[in-house]
Amino acid sequence: MQLTIKYFGMLAEATSISEEQLQIDTCSVAELLISLKKQHPKLSNKDFKVAVNQELVAHDYAITTETEIALLPPFAGG
Amino acid sequence: METKKFKNVFKQGPISSDFIGTSIAKHQSKTSIGAHNIFLGQVRADEIEGKMVTAIDYTAYEEMANQKFHEIREATFEKFDLTCMHIYHSLGKVEVGEICLFVFVSSPRRKVVFKALEYVVEAIKADVPVFGKEIFEDQTHQWKQNT
Image (cartoon, rainbow over all chains, first blue to last red):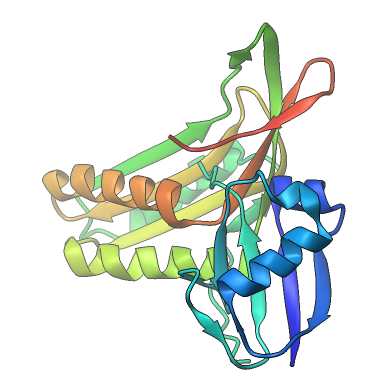
């Protein structure tokens, strides 16, 4: 399946991209993150939450369909 | 993927006092209202390790943020007897001393607007994916984090 990965704030800065497409088999969020951190080593020491289709999810969440994954650094609204 | 359209809360750049004044004036026709309460978030000139913040550059995961603002709005109307509520947040560069968040709640009675406003502002700070790059006078930066 094809995933769209979005990076925001300091994570977009660390990866030098704001978005990328990824072909991947069904996996958990934790497994996806291992692969993303391998690809973008600078993500390893960053604090972030993960949203799947615009809802925050835990790392054991299973990604089974084409989705939009967003890596969200600490919020700073207001 | 299902995409719902929510009201866009974001405005490019700072929120002007004219905009805020006009927004207040628009409520003169809503005569069941007896109390307004307004929160204005202003960019602070923090000093961090000897360097002064001169501006914050805001970005957001806009689709999710607008959805979260919508959920906060729904939850607030559920909890409090409000006549109306307006939220505006800046995107892009906002200089120190300028307004980056404008929350406006109105109700027939005063007590409810004090509680409702705090509820809305705290929910925005905690739940909405907005990111802030604090720009220093020497053009270096760091990423802001709500506490």
